[in-house]
Image 1 (cartoon, rainbow, N blue to C red):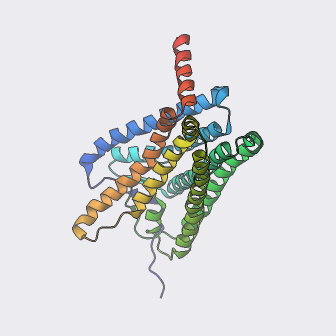
Image 2 (image 1 turned 60 degrees about the horizontal axis):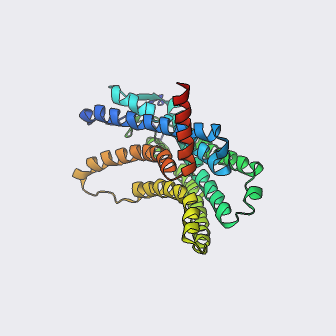
Image 3 (image 1 turned 180 degrees about the vertical axis):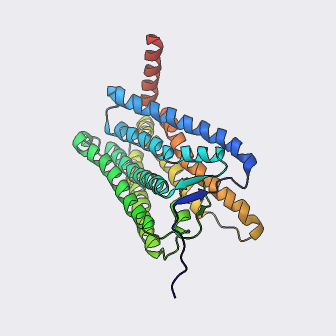
Length: 318
């Protein structure tokens, strides 16, 4: 039997908080403030890592990349979310949805790989300090960062290419603030098993492998730190990697919380959980980018000193 003729989907409707209009203005202000903090904090970090010659090291090069990535990741979705809070009918074109999914997916995968590269940098700095300048030379750390971006972009291109080839000929309502790929795949009127398998493999590569790599790196790092005879030496060694470790815990901790919490079986509580799931997903995308510059500013004396010098120079010129 032939399927009945249905017009192809040319745009999607984003539900967002349509069912809770009273919350939209409150969340608009909250998310706008968080977004501005992200732009300011990460922008300042990029500025100090570029302008201060003392920060022209592999660790701060990776940090500058992480800050730029956080700006790109949030900019790919937050303006769409903010516009949705102010627009009665929240729509996005099919092509616009594909671009937004590509950018968000690419930035997320890139961050996973980049955090692994940063863990390797800390491993070499603490476990092989004498060989650190040789191993982590510019000829090594620049391709490592570029490879992180290339890997994330390639993975995203594969996943989104598979998604946009699916036929969307029925419901076009996405129960989310943005074009979240799983929410979009649910609307396809075709078998999505290939997409699910492809994303499962990608999750193993871009989530599982970096987590394992970071875990093993920190086992060696902690073992090396504990062998340092003086308490002051141990404190200094740990302080060089504490900021990165904190960022890793927050990044992967929020992922585990998002996808590991049990689903409600109560139909009456399903709507509330659906709302909470969307809000948790939204704030997860803002929390880590907002906290990263704060963590690195508070826990890194070199960054704090560079920021003070930058403020002092601005004050002097005025």
